Length: 365
Image 1 (cartoon, helix red, strand yellow):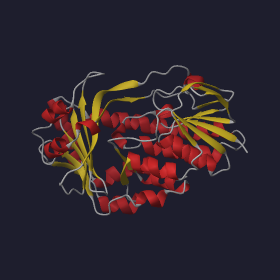
Image 2 (tube, one colour):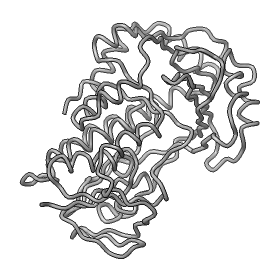
Image 3 (tube, rainbow, N blue to C red):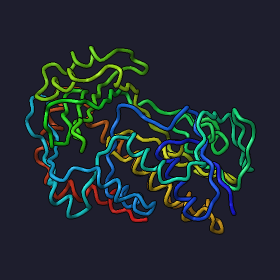
Image 4 (spheres, helix red, strand yellow):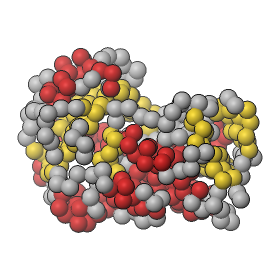
């Protein structure tokens, strides 16, 4: 039986373990945190990700977390529509997306694995192309090492050396809010160098995020965020007022430059370790799930890792580049450019929006 060590117990790592185990691999997941969990954040799972989850055997479980009747679009900070999404056509053309709490998705993936697969509280110090991993509990070897350890990946050093993440120029605050607001509307509000996003969850809570241009490593707290959005349209101030400061995540936004390869020797990178991207297309986790399915399919084949690299690198780097471009437009702050952007959004037909989504969402396993 071939053996695999997956470094990282996030969405991509657990999905990779599930994909490999389903192909007959003996898999061990090494996760540095004391438990597999995530607080205060939702994730959008588009049709491409749901097909990946189908291939992993958990697609229906995840779809059960979705909301049936929703609307979506982009507004300006006064609440005027800039763009409306044709949800019915979107659903018919691509399938309905699902917004789910990340902790719930992790739980679904974790539950689908045997209990003995995931090992928490183990920090990986290094990996080598010959299939050896040095970690806080000793040294382990395997036929395959999967680097699923995030944007500041340790495993990536054995593939590409030191690669510095690129700061996108904006910072984000994310939380899940318990509120009496009954919302079925997904979408974002775009201001000048500032955005706010809202995504209702099936359990009645609201996932929301605030984004604004700022120098790297800017500090601040929820009070500052509330002040920035105090005059924005309903229900943004209400949601921020209901946010629990202990449940708010603050992260500067980064992506990775295009790597020359995702593989070296017995190592394969996936997810943020390979192609960390800005969240503007909602594809970071989706692409990690695609990676996992493709790696599971190819890893045991002749020249499988090289084929994985050829299949995954062009697609993920295209999406990373597209997401960065969208973020640059969304974060415009000069009044004349914002006015031009908003007018362009109002004039863009829904059919053009749907065509632009097809290249990303039409992936099949």
